[in-house]
Length: 295
Image 1 (cartoon, rainbow, N blue to C red):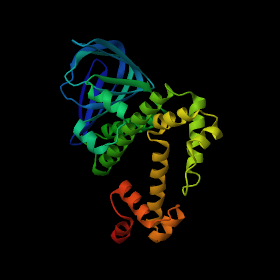
Image 2: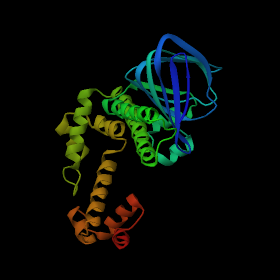
Image 3: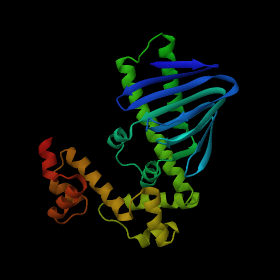
């Protein structure tokens, strides 16, 4: 675990795997410290500020920007080749999970489209309040790093490294989920989201046949267009796209439990086995019978 220190602050870094590093800023800064930065690492960073306050400012031909990350906040950033200045003050404890974009594509290929757009812009700095689970995950990781350092160990042991890799992915996933929730909350009221969740429950109550969108609208008190748009905003799928996906997931669960293909098809509302097989193949890229043969 690499480390550095200065002016009552210390920096630690550990490579979790090629393309993924964990970094920790900590200390007790009576006075602010500032230094110039140049992002020549081209990483996507997921950070959580547990204590203290940090500021980051950039200036280039596109625009000048200034950001502040206070305790209890999280951030997703990607600023390749960006130059600027950063400063810290107070009791400092900030954790960063840094991921190579190519590894990110392998680990989390289904990033929300809006987040992908921000990351691809080359000037992504998305801030938000850290949800309780994200904050707790970051705290557990920091304590594990501190225990490693107290024992005088330079590197994480095998099982500790594996645990930390898993926690790093959890932290990144929670940050992504939090960003998606915040984006949706800006577009839908709490009442709308509550009604849309009710609509989803009604939609999935019977996987043999989907209710019409008009029926969902009438049951929830939402206009038909808000149901359609709301599903895409909140659940990132169309009404019937979500229904069919969940229907096929249930079909796979039953097939894995050794239920006959014809019975699964019939129980899920298919009168034609070939239609069921085509829908299953479209969802999973494999025929139902092939799935059973692989077991």
